[in-house]
Length: 229
Image (cartoon, rainbow, N blue to C red):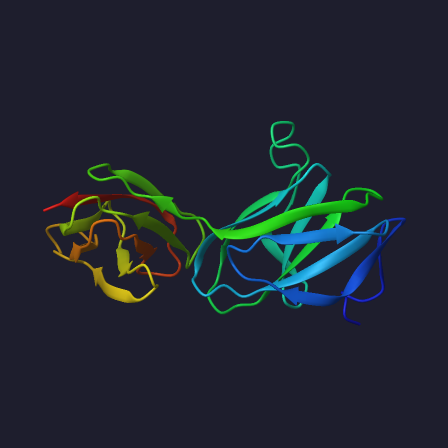
């Protein structure tokens, strides 16, 4: 039986699940109305880029998020309730690694028999790189990616580079998501297995830098820096 239908039991509590799964997009706010006690609603999400994502609720009521695989099996670190209470109220927040092209199911509901409305959004967890600043980059999921944005204030040639002892792989994308170039082991063995990209950038244009390890089984940390040449 599809677990999105009918009543679901959690101990002595009967949760009422919405029969439909709405497909949602990244960076689009979704309004949710829970009109019945113990009602749950489900949403399908298929990311176009492998990387770190943030799923977060906003509102004044006690929300719960549970991200699952399409077959409703659990995803590691996919559940949250009251992520930063009391500073952020009773909102929920998940920071998680998602895989390109894979469909996930997001379960949303309220604590206890609560009813009411709230909003949630799924965003890419992208940080910004600052010129001439070495930034610690940590990939703690096997096969994971880490993404940065960089917006040059002056047009010219820039170098993106990793430093560390691990074997890194780097991609550069334009503001439309087109891959411009990539690099692995730019000066081996002198610079180890680090990656480096040199590219001409346009002032005011935001570029994306995507980083991963060469091996899908490696996790760990390294530093990333961008300089103007």
